[in-house]
Figure 1 (tube, rainbow, N blue to C red):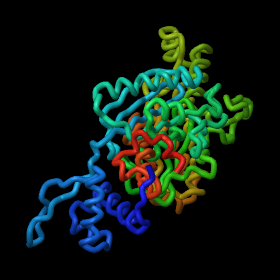
Figure 2: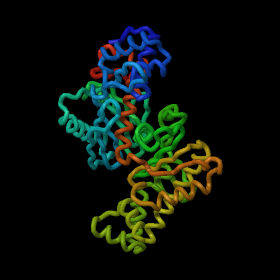
Figure 3: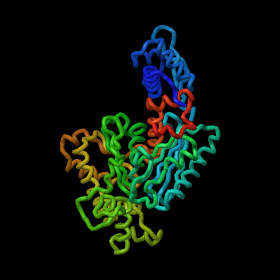
Figure 4: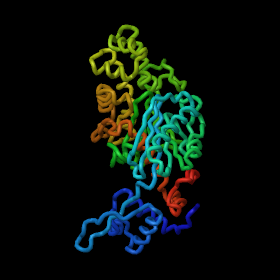
Amino acid sequence: MTATIPSDQLDDLVLVLDLVRSGAARTRPELGRRSGLGRTVISQRVGHLMRAGLLEDGELGPSSGGRAPRELRFRSGAGVILTAELGATSISAGLTDLAGNLLAQRTEASDVARGPEPVLAQVGALFDDLLAARPDAQVWGVGIGLPGPVEFATGRPSAPPIMPGWDGYPVRDHFARRHNAPVWVDNEVNAMTLGEFRAGAAAGARDYLYVKIGTGIGAGLISGGHLHRGSQGCAGDIGHTAARADTSVVCRCGNVGCLEALAGGAALARDGEAAAKDGGSPILAERLAENGVVTAEDVAWAAQNGDRAALELIQRAGRLIGDQLAMLVSFFNPSLLLIGGGVAGAGDHLLATIREVIYGRSLPLATRDLRIVRSSLGDQAGVVGAAFMVLDELFTRDRLAKWIDAGTPAGLPDLTAA
């Protein structure tokens, strides 16, 4: 159902709701001061939002000399958002309230190369598990992060290098049918970037760069306070840029010499296993004998424990990644660079090498106030960011107009077309 709200009233409703949702205004007098709207208009718009079930009265606020004003609260518990971050080797699913607060999370091993149907069935089972603890929760939306390029307008993966069988798969439609709710799909690194920006270490940073170093390597950009996806949605795909090093290694995308193929988690595991087999690393040889494989985490652990071959692999990866990031830092000039992902969190040597290269190769002005730190949200960044992706879309002016009188976007999967 499309609301027939006059344009000026809709603008006022969006403004008032955003001020309360963000915490910028907590009382009606504060709304007046922040918005510039008159007392009568504030009263009317707050009443409209209360009837829609989006706002409610809270406790009495501090008095400035007269009667204490009643605080206003956004009803963040009116519904829930289902989210999932799919990596190459794992799935993390989450449930948040309407303020993006993480209520529950489940993580399982998975293999995205199995194809969309079994992997999305696994996501669906995790969603069912999360909802089982809250049987009365109303699903307002679903947010999905995928480990490959996604055309944001359609929610379909586009020729993802590590996702055979996923090209063009209607991920959005799959979950829209299942939950009868609007669904948005993006690259997982964009979700992580948004999560840190809205609820983590990048809060308040208007220009910042997030880099995930896991099985693959990707980046997300916040520019001027907004997530920059690019014209088709594939901005930040640095894993498949050409590294200035060995060009004989074939990447999973089919090209040679890609950064991911030389410095990502799969590359560290491959080179670590080679070091174990040729006698270069006794520690990794022991891991190989015990487990049958060497992982990137094994290489990082061995480096932390003084294994020379492993340390050389970590430092080589750090130099290659640092070279690419130095170019981005000089080009984009962020105030903050966050490093996340499983490999990045495995030890200090990688981050130290990346820092050294960036500060040594970037323009002095670009690095004068640059902070390079680890992700603060860790494995929660993707599921939290996917929730904010959904919330930001639901509360846009044009979409809010389509569901405000119903009081909920649940049951309106076609909202994504707005």
